[in-house]
Picture 1 (cartoon, one colour):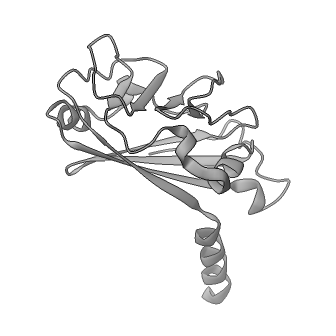
Picture 2 (cartoon, rainbow, N blue to C red; picture 1 turned 180 degrees about the horizontal axis):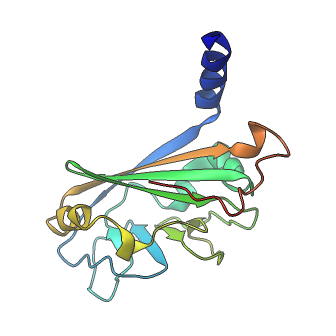
Length: 173
């Protein structure tokens, strides 16, 4: 009975692709932006940069590479981002888009909206900077290390034609 489930789970895990971005926290992190959060390679940050949650990042959005980039450019790609600082973890769920440029070498931006520019990693996120766990934000404000695991799965490939964008679905994190 469980053999079929085990095979399905193994196939599911095999289809997930990902990358890890490492960044640093900063005393000026505010994390108050209503519609985005950003991780940047820049080391300088003022309090006006209220969307920025990580500095001195290991890469910008261009660094995701071609394989992951091609997955991110599918409308049926579900993106899960696990943000970790110390013992604090938060997860963000968003979607890929064929409109993604993925060309910015210094910045990586997650958006609640459908707006896309060269730094956009994903759209229609369930959280922006102000929605993140405040304990995680406090850890980043103390200069903690940010580890952002970005995992992408084309849900359309699991059951073609029936998942789509999961319109109206509630995703809990």
